[in-house]
Amino acid sequence: MPPATPWVGAALCLSLACAGPEGSVQEPPFQGTAFIDPDLIVASDPSALLSLDHAGRGVRTMFDRRMDKFVPTDAYLFHATFEGEAVVEVQVNAEFGDAVLAERHAAFYARAIGQLPAGLRTRVETVWIHRGDMPFGGGNDNILIHTGKAAEYLRDGVLEEILMHEAAHTSLDPVHAAADAWLAAQAGDGGFISDYAREHPHREDVAESFGPFFALRHRPERILRGMAETIQATMPNRIDYFDRLDLDMHPAR
Image (spheres, rainbow, N blue to C red):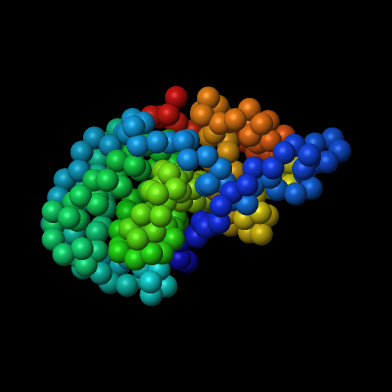
């Protein structure tokens, strides 16, 4: 299946008035959670990336949203090594024209991926990088990047938050999205954190919920108190579920 597509609208934080009796949620407080705050991860935050090594050039089967299919693609190849000795092959479409530019892209995105919690990289084996103004994607043991869309995410300050959403698809969905305990947490909360999660409850709920969990538990000083209260009131059972996973959150505190 092609990688999942993030919500591409602006997020709106609504007040706690959206909560019904006994905490039941009638309407999601956000449109899409990758956009709730641009400072959950910022460029100056530490990265677990240790090294990036050129690994030659070769043909790899990569998903390209511009064609909406998997395509054998000539690519520049790089091995990104992260703390914990995890190695990810970064595959940069040869359309970028030369190895120096390809390495620049590989290094930039590998560092950003290294800023994500280690628990979100557990199933990431490859990164695909193409030109094009198309949404990022997660799944297939991969993170998909289109640099034209990345320019928009960088402008809005949400590049790292988008990558976190996609990495949650890649590393959490296969184990948790259909797990009985997750579905029980979903039912117990009585609603969804975003319109996007509500519209795609089986595909997007884990990824949409992880960002707010991360904000509440690991970046509380970077979000408004009202946002923290909204997150806690909307998805307490999902928060408990993530807490019980005891994910490796390094390099986040």
